[in-house]
Image (cartoon, rainbow, N blue to C red; front, top):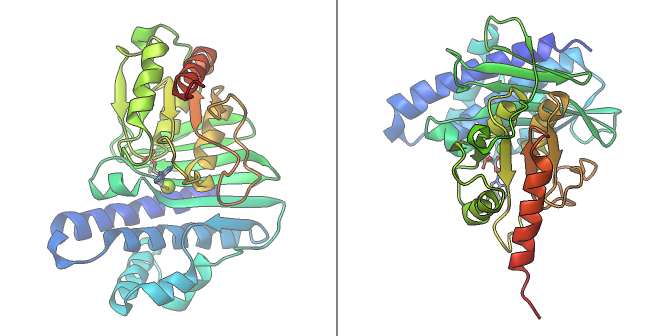
Length: 322
Ligand code: AMP
Ligand code: MG
């Protein structure tokens, strides 16, 4: 399968999101425009445009829709989005094109489904921290590939483009690189185990994860909070060893498939491990929400068992004794 058209689309989407950050967040923050909306619709439209040409018979699962675009977005903003897409694609497109791309092959049945998070880590995007443009490939119940544009990936001028296909994972500079193979690291020593978690307290329980780190002997390990699936990308590239995602106790919000499928593809292809907090594989057969999964343990594989044990211990501690 040739992923080049999707790489191009993700690069174009990254140009669009950067433009939105520059003009709508940094320069005209006070004008009341909604940068997320513009960037989300723009990014999704660009990726779906590429899919419609390169993989016309495949299904799409993505957050935004053409109906929302027409109903919820003010005409002036719709014009801005359409202009930005035209600018990035280098040709004139109109509102009808945008609507058609946003809805491209949604709700159809196909052997292959592309799972798109046009901007993952919205809060990071707005705060000029980390975010990614994430695309996963589902075949039946399995995640078989993924592409991730990470504009703030450390060590690259304009970010990195990661991808996984046929059981192998790669990284390249966003705009001009040649892909190099990546593998998750072999580190097991606590001083070398770099731990990642969400910035946002409302997305995952910082307290529960701190207890897991304590029980796993990783409390003094290098630790960073970053937004988005870049966390999965870092584990895949050997730039981190553990990403924990334990929901807040009593959280009822399911994890979205587009928040995990692209990243999981990268980590698994790089030789790492991705499981639920009970150690079972994530179940990608349930549509837009991972309704069979509680949380995520993502690691280089080598430290997985030790962390899983610590998670079980925390769950046990939390169970009220009778
Ligand atoms: P992160 O930056 O890793 O926290 O991931 C950002 C993603 O978390 C967003 O795309 C949201 O879809 C998702 N999210 C927001 N709230 C929750 C929640 N309560 N539980 C799980 N995921 C959430
Ligand atoms: Mg997301």
